[in-house]
Amino acid sequence: MANPQLDTMYIDMRFINTSGQSLDFISATHNAFAGSFPPRLSDSDLEVRVDAVQFQAAPHLRGDILIDYDVKKLIFEARFSYALNEHIIHFETCFSYAYEKRLYYQSPKINYYWDHSIKFTPSSNRRCSSSITRRTPNYPYSYKVDFLIE
Image 1 (cartoon, rainbow, N blue to C red):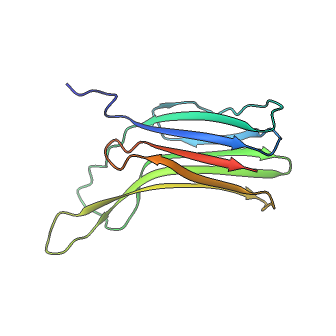
Image 2: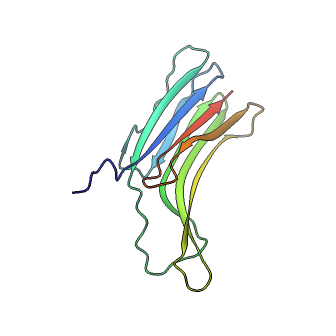
C-alpha cells in the first residue's frame, strides 16, 4: 500500500520582511490540495518579520498521449499580492516540467523547473529578491523558497 506522505510534494515558503512595515493582503491563488491559505503575514511592529507558509501538492505528471516537446506544464503554482504603501508586491512560485526530445527514438527526457519571482508594481527603489534555498531533484520534488523585501 502506498504511503501518501511519500506521494506528497511540500512547498515551504518564507516571507522575510526587513522593511519595518507590515504588508496588507490583496489576493492569492494556488493549485495545491492543502496548505496555509490565504497566507496571512504578521503585522507586528518588529523590524524584521519572518513568516512561514507550507503547501502540499500532488507531483504527478499529466497522462498526455501526445507529447509536446519543450512546453512547460504546471504541477504546482502559487501567486500572492500584498500592498506596501502605494506599491503592490507580487510573489510567484511554480514547479513545472517539460519533455525534451532525444536522438534515435529514445524515450523523451523530462526536465523539471523550480521557478520563483517577486516584483513591485509600480517599480520601486526598494530591493526585493527570491531564491530557492532547498530543492529535491527526485520525486516528490519538494522545495523551499525565500522571498525577501528590504
